[in-house]
Length: 287
View 1 (tube, rainbow, N blue to C red):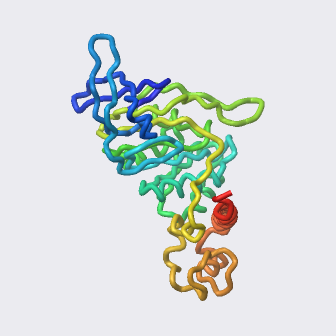
View 2: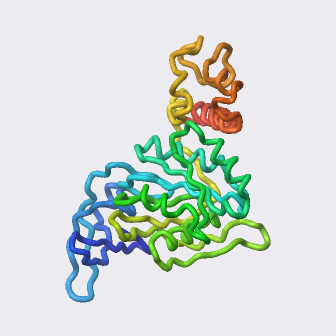
View 3: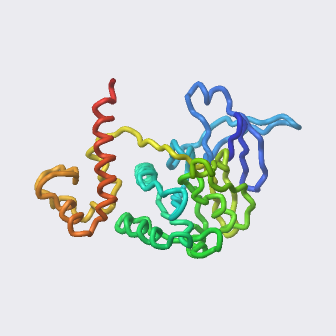
């Protein structure tokens, strides 16, 4: 499904497409269709649009990017410009995991900054994201990525300018509009204006999503934050204090692993920053 200006495009099992609007009862239920939704529809007659009468239960969903029923979120980060925002990567991973969506990390533009690409990939060892270093412009690494995504509904997400649309074009022979970088601010141009679901060769579908530079996680009990970090799992139950935040506590097995280099210290530093942010938002949640 694709939504633009209150109109939605849906495709049935035979590939026929329908232009639809959401019935008023969905608005009254505060339910808005998302790309990836499975729906019941009432086709229009002639040139008239049809209606979405019901949104079927979602297997999972995200608020931003606004998608549903996704098998894999492909998080794309550029090794070169725009400067990689790994805090955004961490937030995207956290949101996906809390929604029950698998994560695939892709480091693009590795030909421009190979050392940076290797460093980014190294920071996520143990994060269960199987980092792939690729170059969408030359095709390097795309065969391995295409095979991992075969038959799956997947969304590409990440910073504007990281090369998501270029990567989709190179993976599947499509012709999505692509953009470069703003000369003034060295940030990505937001080429993709809306989410769209695209069937791809070999089975499965891809969602092209707009890039973005800000992303906020939902508010939840801060002690749950560590559950979004697979690196901590081997050390759970081995800390002196229970529960342990794995932040500054003495005799913390996870902190010992950080000091020993078993968990990347920069990934842990960003975790601590997110933890402090979540603690503050948790305290302020009723204000």
